[in-house]
Image (cartoon, rainbow, N blue to C red):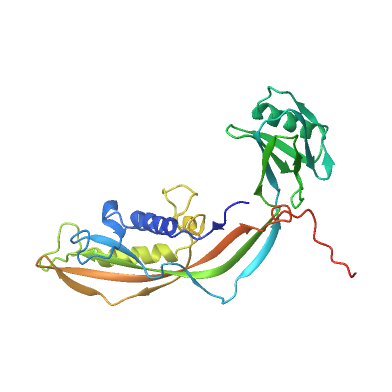
Length: 298
């Protein structure tokens, strides 16, 4: 069965947030926009933008998630682990292949190829594919989602094989809406005297305001004049899955670093995001039962 897949990915979400800030604030070099780390000293003195996640994982909006089941194509792997002379057969969807009779010198790869050809000759609603050795194996995938293939193998004395369900025929998704919060801290050293050549005493306020507007805007193009893509849309797309909800402005702070005052303007940004885990539901094939056990009264 396939491994569970978790939809939420913090690194992808932070990457998209950083990409939006880099585009919104060209006054700050990209290398000076970074994630906050547990350190007593900031990574960059003066002008920088620090991203501080306030929630390590999204807070779920509902106490109970929603679950859904979806049919998918079941996939098996048939591997020949020990070769033996004699008749080999494979049963799929209740139909048994004509035997492939292996000779005394046939290798596991030859037997696997013969069994695959025998399955193809049945013309069932399945598709086979070779597996690059090792092992000497091939896969059988159902053409119809939800079908349980019920693969079995018979081997002559001395022969050995391995059956593995790679993907089951039902996949379950457990999902909820979550809230993800980050704090964006815009830092700069203000000029206490004449207005600098840039025209502003510091850019912390300017960058904070532009970033706030960019987050609230419907769409902002990555490149002027191009219709797509949009930074705002990229936040919502995979793998970030971030939908802006609100921005709270925090009181401005002034902290002293290296004998100078650093102005800090902070925004707390709230996003909504789907949090989800998908995983295969073990079929009766996977647990070793061809059908549900029947209980009768004696």
